[in-house]
Length: 461
Image (spheres, rainbow, N blue to C red):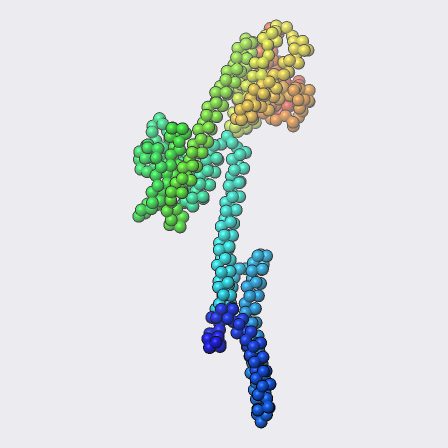
């Protein structure tokens, strides 16, 4: 009891002891004092007035002291409750909570402060993760829209890997088997265009042995992880990260993560290479088919070569860029590839074609488009191949396009195709002279052919 009554140390007492003291001061003491007055009242009549006053004063003081102890406890609890409620509703700045007591309530306040501090740190990490995720989503979107550019996928992998491992720099090396060297394909936070001999240093050693390397920071050398890019049993490159943020070092978990990532990266690179090889073979096959179409008809031999020549001259007249020139050149070679599906009986017929045979001939642009469709890199040619017989007045085929519905490149292709056809001999007629063919183009300018294209063509031929 002596320890409880030491009010100077009450701040460090437990809540239970404080509540017990508050109960004693507000309830038990006044009751005992009242009984005491009743029992000894008659014997203290002389001092009655003064004693009663003193007793009442002590009772009031005791009650007030008890109330104050309870008020301070309740105030501390309410303060904590208010802060917790404000924090959960997002209305608090989560400042450090302070209480005057030195008991379980103070421990509760300290716990609240620790929790809010940790939550603030977690929120910051989540915000950083959200920002990184948004950046990754943007890069993924860009990569998806241009699948043919493998470098965008590799750049995405390197950026994600670097941030995930909290590294300062990263490089993806590919192996040049001809001269046994590694060259940088993608670099992040470090020097690009680096060349390393097989067996040279840690990275070269990984390429030679096929075994990963985990090196801790030594003196001025940063920590490093390097893992081989393997496709089956074949080493095609090395994936490396260096310089852990915050002066930390990489660990085995980082090594496992990078090794897993390298396996997927190697598969992506090799699949892309196989895809490109297959695509190249397909394009070569289509080009051979186009040449075969010409070879089937002796009167059209050299047609594609001449169309390439005419198209490129027109491209220069229109100041078109190299990409447009490449499209025109390739379209000139492949525009009639759909004729591979037509019979020799129609292609090599010496007389004029019947209306039904003309309808069959008109299918060759669509057949050609379907031949090119499977190859992504040939997609830009599909429109040119399908529409090279469209006329600006809408009477062409197969879709009856007119004016601005037809691209400039297609209009160029239509003019040079018609010109070479008019100037080439046929079994049923002799080819026109250049002058006659130019006049014919001029006659149908604005009807079948674009007037501007005809004017520029006539001026350069």
